[in-house]
Image (tube, rainbow over all chains, first blue to last red; front, top):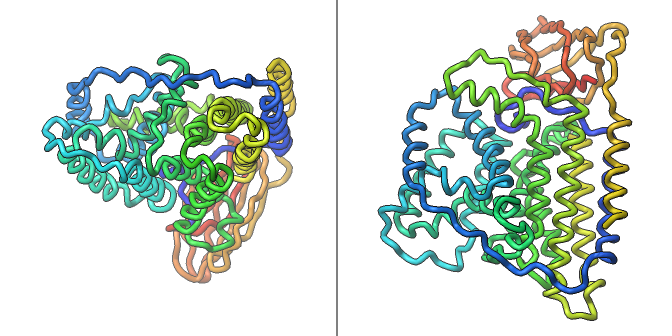
Amino acid sequence: MTVLAHGVGARHDLPLPLDLVLQGAAVALLASFLALGLLWTKPRFDAAEPAPDRDWWPVRLLVAVGLVLVPAAAWPHLVFVLVWVGVPVLSMLFGPVWRVLNPLRVAARVTLGRAYPERLGHWPAALGLLAFTWVELVSPDALPWFLVAHAVVNVAGGVVFGRTWFERADGFEVFSTLLGRLSPLRGNPFRALVATPVRPGLVAVVAVLLGSTAFDSIGSTPAWERLSVPDTAGLVAAVALVAGSYLLACRSFGGQLAHSMVPIVAGYVVAHYFSLLAVEGQRGVALLFGHTGFTPDDTLAAPVLVASVQLGAVLAGHLLAVVSAHDRALRLLPANRHLTGQVPLLVLMVGYTSGGLALLFAG
Amino acid sequence: MKTVHALLLALLVLAGCSSGPEAAPPAAGPLVLDLSVDHASPQRVEAVRGQAVELTVTSEQPVDVHVHGVDVLAKAESGKPAVLKFTVDRTGTYDVEAHPDTLLVQLVVR
């Protein structure tokens, strides 16, 4: 089985040069342990949940009407590029945009108003995201089936549980809201991050997001093809590896530090998908307007630019994650373990970052 | 944090130097590869931008062979290998596949 790059792509990026990978990993390692020694010793960021947006349901209605007019040929680009990559990038910049755009959220207007079970937490979102990444990376032809199932499940959830369903159980909205906490336009991102409610399944959501991106790199290498392991097994193993290593390093905290992984997720999303969004995003927009023969301008996919963006995004995500985890750990750890208690998490983050860079080299 | 900033800056400068825009050297000869669909053992093969590529693909079953990102397509069948000749003008990583999804080789064009 060959992984079709990101569901739609044709050409992928050049592998990141090895010297950049090694330098990047060294900087991440050095910066992390410097931060441990140099950063503040008393917690500094109080949780501040960004103010919710006004409920603009006419926007959703407009999107819903617009979807009817989307040409059949444009759907893969619309979903795999504009929604799956464009929405997270917009969320990082402007806040949780998917809750504003999601046409299915209209369903919450005619709700039965049942209480959403606390125990479910973000588990449905994690499963939904895993299903979507399976479609994206293993079987893009299954996209129509996924979309129908996604619509049915979310309309049903919205009707039964109302808005809470979308806030906790819709993978796309949970993803967009998590990344939206990084938006500099909505107050201090560190305060927004630490305000992330720790619900069951939060770690699973983060593991699916990181693990699937990692598998995207692994799965497109010839070495993976030669192994002849089913892609589904590879995807699940990558997610399990991320979840397992997090739980091992943070076993005393559980999900209390999961929010600090969000910048790492964001860094990987940008590193991985930058050229796809820049080039295939143009084609996606052209397809929406029915132009099938459009040739995108690929100035933004120049190797030097792509390598710089990849390295910059991964390292920036790493640094934000380290600062965010440091501040939270000061609150969670007893004073005499402030330094030593952070080491496993730092090692984990350096591992994720070096691993991510290595994958950009390999894949 | 100052140290960190300085390090980061140094890194970005290094990044800029080590992967600066390289003028595509005049391609040596064409890149010639013989591939088999039945015994696919995909590798990564380096090529230079503008270099001619000639692929000969044998297969026992009739299959379509194509290069993702390059508009070339050829049919291979028993006793009649597919021959694909093309040049790649853009840098990037390109998958050569037999339909539906057998990876034959990955061209890394720099």
